[in-house]
Image (cartoon, rainbow, N blue to C red; front, side, top):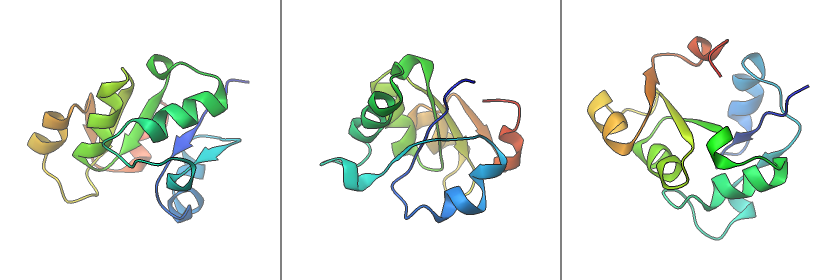
Length: 110
């Protein structure tokens, strides 16, 4: 089975309430694992190292331009969800590769 990872700087409630419907995961990284938060890519790199994958083979799902900026800095695919209050211009301007309305749209796309 392929490994998947979710990288968050939340308290994990989003994982429990939403993302377990989208992908499976074994490990998580959060802001407690790194010194700098996004738009620094440090959290993304920590998660990739934990899963032993290259950032170019991974994707981040986020809801802010800073998620996309961090991903772009390491060549990671960025999918933005319109739940963070940012318009498409800001999300794409930050570097999002695609933007979706709802996390449910991610099923079969990641």
